[in-house]
Length: 291
Image 1: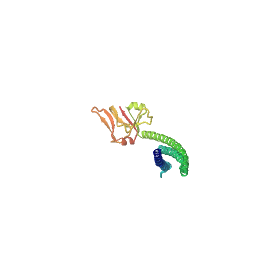
Image 2: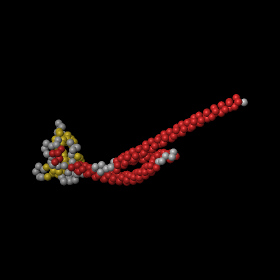
Image 3: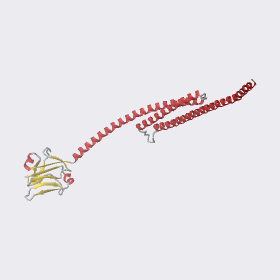
Image 4: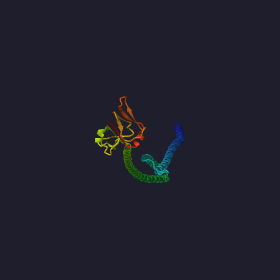
């Protein structure tokens, strides 16, 4: 009986000794787990905060880039000339892309703020910053709308100027065409000459020539109309075919300004004008008669 009691007491002593050791180990395990959880929470918070700062920097940079493009759009060079409308529209499209990126980053910041609130992190300053950035983006949206309105007005102005310029160019072209035509007419009139080759009798009957004087009567050009004559440009008429005998040049033309080319049988083949300027300076009419 005594032996049994000793064994029981020994067993109880072992249990009593082991119990504190087990409790201590369990506490240590729970403490380590809590420490790991806290470390994970800290890492998550740090990551979220880094994301917030990255978004803030990106939004600030985008706003600066937007301002630069706005200044380029509204700038006027020293000669008062604005950039082409298509380039301005390209700048506005780039501004739209930057604004869309800002809105997406700000939405991400708001989601991050919500996560930090769940983690019981004090984020009053962050919320204030988000509110301030929202206000800046709203103001920028208003500025961009005003800029779009101005660009639309500029487009209308450009179209009106282009229409006006096109009208003026068309009018000037008409004037130039008219002057060109008038110049051509004047030039044609300036170099217009008339000639006729005919039998003497037929020319007299047509009142193209007449005979004056009593002794040694001579042929002279009559002051009739020019319906029977051929109208040509003096710059193009270099010779007149005749192919007749007993040829007379009735009108007065300077000697040495023309030649009568004869064949061996005394037939005058043609009249060749060797000096057109001198030939036509005395008369714009050439009359050649033959018997």
